[in-house]
Length: 240
Image 1 (cartoon, rainbow, N blue to C red):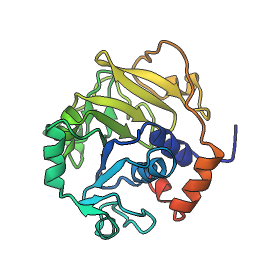
Image 2: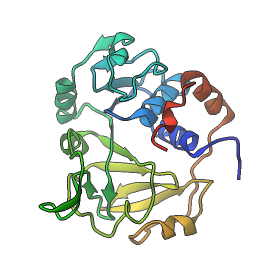
Image 3: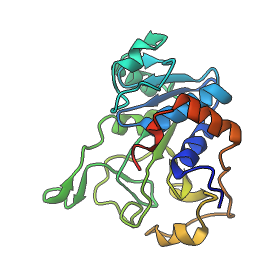
Image 4: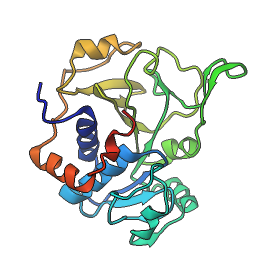
């Protein structure tokens, strides 16, 4: 296994590779990894990508000083313009938001996403933050990308405990693989070079659907060099 990069580097580069030049892309709170990936994409292959965030910043010049929440005022202070959150929801509902990065705690093969409770809704073992904006953005954004830094059978379950949202899901990027939602089911899109089909199977509670076994492109030397420059504080690894 190539030791020149870590899982956080691999996931960041894999997410950056999913973004295209000219797209309008939004990330929310506690979204350091996709935030860095958006900046990486702008630096390398998508200079005209439009970066939107929760505090209202448009194309912040840097993420190096971003606050711990990835939703601080610094992301506005260094931005080209101000675009408030309520306008992001309106943009998405008008079909003008290309990509939204969102989170979740449980996922099943049918593309259901749980961010509300673990256990029975009325007597939960754990009550989670809830859907926040995802109930609007997942159905209305052109492409919804989920990232999750844990991949185990408690995360990728046979049936979620509660359906917070579902719908226009596109990709789920994990430390082991990338899932793609198509034909109403999650399909295995690619396995990371640091993992294996057997490892993904062992850590997924539902049946793996795939046409062929494909592997995620590893980070390039150029991507790793740029990551060190734009993210010297290693914000992309905060969730690990």
